[in-house]
Length: 294
Image (cartoon, rainbow, N blue to C red; front, top):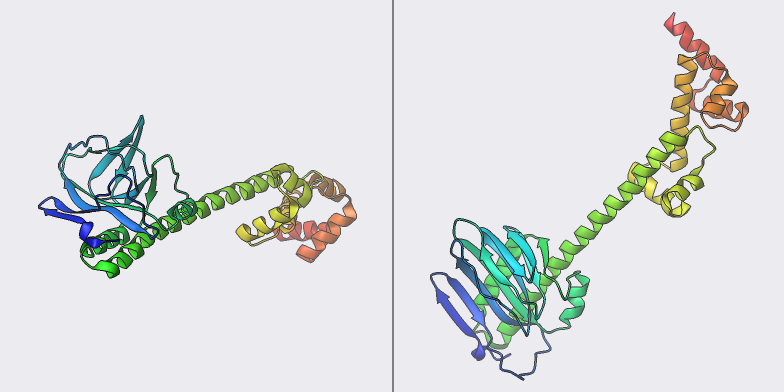
């Protein structure tokens, strides 16, 4: 890119760098800056309709609170938030705070940017707001503004900083996916725990629990163990054993009835599992508890 074509303006309100693209002028293959600025906006400022025909843009609020409107959609943008506006999408900027605000803006194109934006889960039709580490975006934009007269080296620096901003948005998207996935996973596990607590007295096993969630047994087992540090079969057994202990010490229920009440197929299976856990048969455990309470 020919750095001589850049127009740089510096005023008390801020700094602005732009590349005045002519109609029909070919796009650059490398990542290239079309517009870059750090500007102050007075309280109650409202722009006219803006539309970047040739480039996508990232806006990041450094100070204040802004509303960006696109058709009937409004996006509230506060400090430490970045907004991605796709190429060709019209919008306007409004400072909705009672004091002066400041926005960092970066417009860019090229370098198979569409693939990068897809990886960052940035829609090519609607603005997307992200909570980001804004200081990194500020640093990149300041670096771009300082590189305006650096020729080929400046073009390389600008491409690098654009990539840094997009990578930051990609990393934020990954964190959002991870949080969303963890939330989903936690819902699965919590649903499994609720199912076990409500149905441990029935003839259920790991497969039936997984079926109740609508997921495979293998996936459920791995997921449950990852979040709880125990297997679903072990958790089910613990719930059954704890219930059996309460019934043995708090009621006169027969051992066979306790076994049935806690979901065991027969008294022998129950006694074997109980002895393995407590070192005593159910009857011995009951007598010992009764003697200790006398």
